[in-house]
Length: 394
Ligand SMILES: Cc1cc2nc3c(=O)[nH]c(=O)nc-3n(C[C@H](O)[C@H](O)[C@H](O)COP(=O)(O)OP(=O)(O)OC[C@H]3O[C@@H](n4cnc5c(N)ncnc54)[C@H](O)[C@@H]3O)c2cc1C
Image (cartoon, rainbow, N blue to C red; front, top):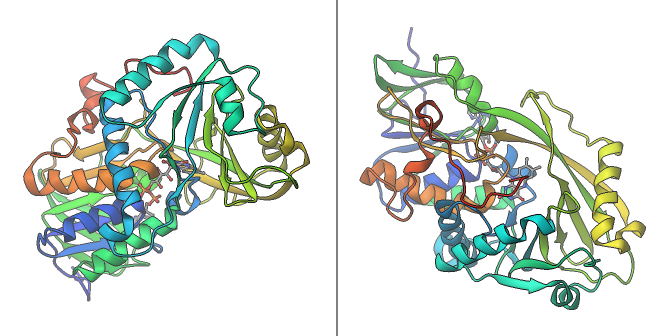
């Protein structure tokens, strides 16, 4: 017997997941009043990967459409209050990309491509970097890429900010409502089954992060996604260390880091553990990996040897085979869309990704950025994405 959902039995568009992606899409759809939009989350907004995100914001990518998504997103982060109408959390610290000597040519080519796309970025020498960040050891840095306008934000803040603004514009939000099944009849989407009842709709968008794999598997669609656990350390800076420094991805030390306010440093590793259960993974970071990451970070910022370990964070990336998201309608099922597979990089592009997905739904194509290269069928087609000048650890 069909039990319709008591609050939202019918919708025009259902968005599954209220992380930064689902919430951004809800906000951008709401701006255009496309009918009844319902956002469903099994938990609360921003409690998935978004709330655990290190939330670095940078535009240094090797694939042009990713750069374009990051550029548009930065514009939204910087003008958050004006656009979204609530206070934002964007911190402009600057961003530095460091690569080994053998990849400097790639770095230069990427910076040139990014500049052509309007990114405020350039190359700086090790000496210039030292002047900016006196605590950093730059002996092994010949040249680095520098973006003065980048920095970091807050995943749960962005998800909740977008969602609050979407709700103020008429979107219905159903927290603590688990989607147990996608409803597909023949080649058409009919809605979703939840633990509170069914919601009928011709369009369903899964912004369900690492949980997307199981949801689609249940209806016989194998998404090429894998869950990968990552750990992050928050260190208390020692007395005398300059606070509020640049965010950095450092392929020589194999860590990324950023300041966390004026007195702390966040450090994360590049490599994670594959095949974890997104509903049952360690909630505490291991002392061993936190110690390892802190050690690597000390190669770049020696003062951190005297830092205190404040806490660890664990979280799960939804990895795709080419480390790029799956954005678009699923092949063979009209009205079923996916926006997942952000591979540990989704926060910084979430504002623009929600915008272009709203364009795809309402106008038939991404207008702000052409996102056809991200179509979910690209792996089956044999067209995974490859940036022109990718790094070995991209
Ligand atoms: C440790 C860590 C560090 C990161 N650092 C960065 C960084 O520095 N910069 C960057 O850009 N990105 C970073 N990322 C990646 C970024 O955080 C993610 O790409 C982004 O948050 C993904 O957002 P999302 O909305 O797709 O997924 P999520 O935030 O995971 O949201 C998915 C939502 O779907 C809901 N859901 C799932 N299944 C169901 C269901 N069956 N029914 C109803 N609801 C469901 C969940 O409850 C959840 O709220 C990091 C991620 C992690 C884990």
